[in-house]
Image (cartoon, rainbow, N blue to C red; front, side, top):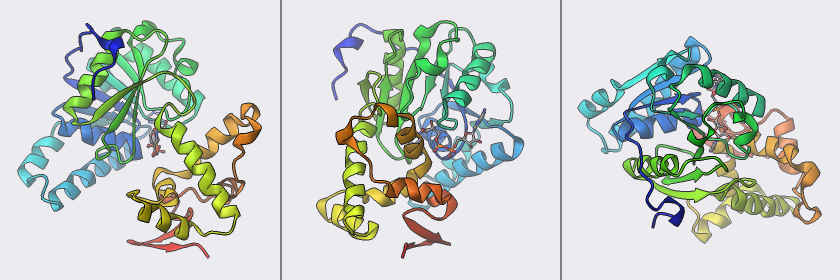
Length: 300
Ligand code: NAI
């Protein structure tokens, strides 16, 4: 993929250490990708237990690469040795790049960026993995806004190749070029996006999900729709994919933009009703499918 014209003449910065804030599904995947690319990585979590869980998720990602014959045990050990985890913002003090991957809530992200403004070096690049929220809504208080961008990975982040590099009105071209260089080092493909609802991938996915929801209303089961889309050539069906990603992020976005959504972009109520049962996908062992230990069953 060619570099966008907007980056012509821009110089990427060298990165040694990447700090990831939030080591959940995405943060642990991003940390794994960064470790595999050779960076030193620190994960910052909310508590010591959450930090341990994040460390375990990264170790699990690397273990599955060993199992698939993609990584030797010696390389895995050396890779894991470059990871540190913490329950405080200490590790961001010498980070060259910080990637925020906490809950998809504007206030939570704003409080993380408040802390980054104080704890990170004044020139560290600050990125957010937000799926839908305009990054300027939670970073306006941060000094040097030219160092802020979106780095939007796709789940599982250590496997999926696309990264959207999201430009705010203030982002410096060198910062965007650094995002592109990092993605290349991770053997990923970067694309430049402006700020819009869902950026590129999720914007298109929104339309796909709406149509899949209409098929549910028409009486097709999630399993039938997933089966049809896999036969069509998709690696996963829409509902399996939504369950894997977590249903709460799309739910929160539908609520956020309900007032401004054009009438011809109606969503089915079925996805909302599923989340309102407390079912948010694989993490809660129930979404469009029910998940037992190591297996999956369709909902009745
Ligand atoms: P998650 O719920 O699995 O992980 C979030 C993590 O952030 C949790 O481990 C939580 O303990 C931690 N956290 C929350 N507040 C924190 C704080 N103040 N300091 C440190 N850690 C904190 O969520 P997930 O799915 O990983 O999503 C994270 C972000 O990535 C969201 O903005 C989401 O929209 C975005 N995203 C999610 C994708 C997906 O497929 N799930 C895909 C691409 C982006």
